[in-house]
Figure 1: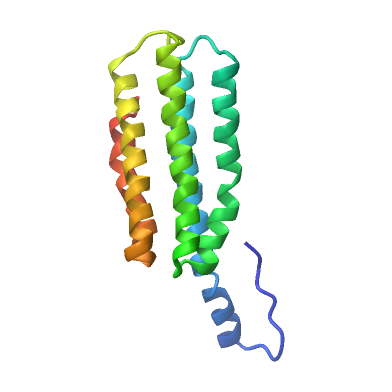
Figure 2: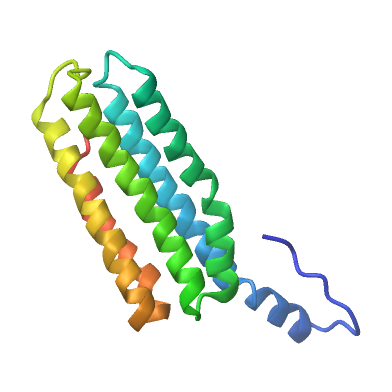
Length: 166
């Protein structure tokens, strides 16, 4: 996000309007930051239970990181052009990819017996990952019908994070 360059005669109204035009970008920035914080927290808590790793699990995480680094691009396009379908679809596919890879990460570690101990909290976290995926899918579907409301869907993630806290 860039501070606006204002040309021409300046006044309080002109400066205010320039800053008001940044509100959608600021919303997208804060939304993506909060989502990444929640996902990083979930990833961190999952890896607290993993005692072994192999190349496949490592590559699942590398691809997960690829989707993570695409978030600034998808969030910027959402902030700039959030009233249009394509930027919403791009952002929601980006988040869906992150959610699916987080689930694959957990599922693979369980399948390969890399988990120290599967606690009740860990099982809740697995279910929360599935919940994340459904929320991302809902946001993606809303991109085509209620485009501007699609990002609001992510508020549903908050109850999932409360369930999986330790």
